[in-house]
Amino acid sequence: METDLIISAINEIHQKANQALENKDVTNYAAIFSEDLTYTPAEGVTLNKRDYTIDLKKYFNQIKEIHTSYYRIKSSFENEIFTEKIARKSVVLKPNLLIFSKKQTVQTEEIYHWKKIKAEWKVVAIEIVLEEKY
Image 1 (cartoon, rainbow, N blue to C red):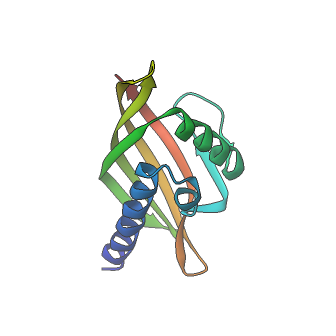
Image 2 (cartoon, rainbow, N blue to C red):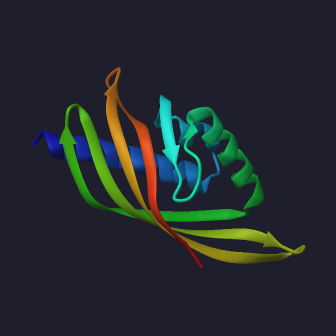
C-alpha cells in the first residue's frame, strides 16, 4: 500500500518534470533534484546538480522543441530510497539552416533514486544505463 502512494506522488512529479522539459524550463525541471544529486550519463563523467543544470541550459538553447514520454519498467523501495527504472522516449527538434528543423529521437533507460527530504520526494541520483539516438 505504501508503495502505491509513493508511486502516485512520484508520477505527479514526473508529469511536472516532463512539462518543464517540454517548456525548456531548467528551473522547474531542476526543482525535482536534491542538492546532492549525482547524474551519470550513459557514456560520460558523473555530474553534480550545478554542472548538470548548466549542461541542461546549454542543451535547451540548442533545440527548438522537445516532446517526451516514459513508462516505469520496475521499482522498489528499501532503506528510505525509492528506486525506479524507466524507459523514456524523447523527440527533439533541432534548428537546421534558417527555417528547417532536424528531428532526432532519443530512447533511454534511466534509473532514478528518490528520497523523501523535508516531506518532499527528491531525486538523489540518476543513471542513464542505455541511450540510443536516431
